Image (cartoon, rainbow over all chains, first blue to last red; front, side, top):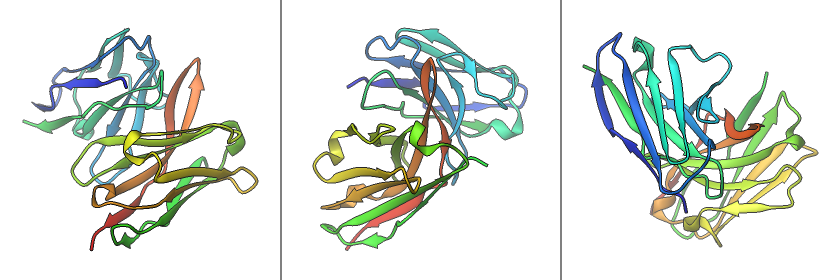
Length: 107
Length: 120
């Protein structure tokens, strides 16, 4: 199975900060990587797929990059509604594993 | 509106069985592979199972293999998860999710989830 390791697990930041979350795969996954945002008590929401393609309706302050084993989610200017937990997921092969999550909290 | 709505969650004793349902509306259900994802209390997301669009292939996570069975009824736009030999560590919110694709895959539509609690 492909393991995904996110870092950090927890992040404290202020509004308008630039935030970067990394996701490392245990083996190459090309660009079969998606990022999701989850608010407490809600379903995950797709932000980015194919490592860098912004899902329709997602604000342009969210960006993704990477290929192979190393990936990054960047929020260019953190907004109050962005405080949530973020997950990466690989979709190159079953089981479709998720990273352990990164919780972004207000400093 | 594209929507998924899960149902069937309950409080169940260890060793029991349960069937979860997911009703799809607003899209051609038979064109999409479908998945179940769960989230234990205070924990992260865990992919559970998948079924291809025509229902001819299924996939399972190791912790549920041999105990859970995924199925679908394309004529009714319904996805199911049959859960047997339930364990305390199966306690979670269960989400169904649509797998979209544009050269690469992603889960673009999620239900709100249904809660399964396994406890004596």
